[in-house]
Length: 361
Image (cartoon, rainbow, N blue to C red; front, side, top):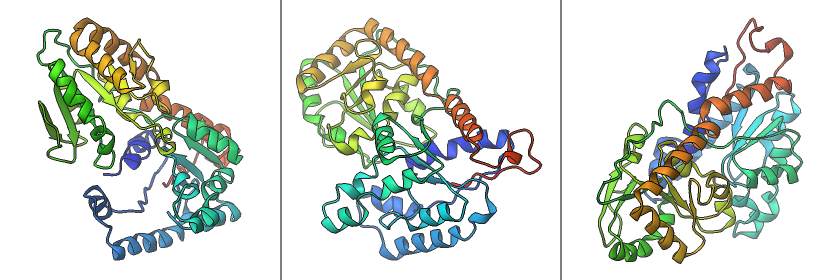
């Protein structure tokens, strides 16, 4: 249920296994916690305490592994004592970021959190063996923090799973689609009044794939329940993919995964020019970057009314997504850097190990 873990950890497990590495994932929060967060409920305090307690006991097993791979941080909202211990006892760690989690601390509304832990993630980055980041905004933070080794890896798709949609140039109505989690639907909601106005001028259907059964939209729309198994088939029901974002610091740390999903299925896209969106979308080539409400209306209208433009941009987006944003490409880059930089002992190098290295995360 956790998107970051699913896309930056779990989908690489089989790849590590194919080169003789054993992996063990030790999750922090559980599905009970995620269910409450996605339902906009206050997490159960006893369950959260048990998650922290479980992580403490997991740390007692680190001596068994050759690489410790941390997603974001060991203990959220606690100082970096655990990372300090990993660094001092010689085990070390790799750390991975696909969100600007440092802003949870340096921009926290409480002055005590800002002063006490404002530079927590900088310390974690600086003392890691390798800092993996999902985009340029996160990369710049790692550089400023003094991280020794940095690898920029976007959040990617599995090429074999994301097939190209069969385009019907005569389809009516054209479907404009958005896919996301219950925590990111707020970005779509900010655009809904504009989409309602646009439907009065240009006929189209809005398709929303989310954890919710409905949205507050006065127009032609459909809500579908998202699942990992159905996400590609849902995108295939769309003709244009959208990704609105506010131009805020947290959003600059996002890795544009929605856009990559749309493009990997051959859809043209319209997105806010925020953070990595401006890297993924080549304006006027595989989609449009809309800076204002007027531009959102203009570019969406162009794509809705012009089937040939949708097909041309969709083809270019498909080519880019499958050239640069694939699991196979990311894995080769990860594998090469980890073993070239001697992040594991030399006797554990690929194809020469007598016992497979372990890669817990």
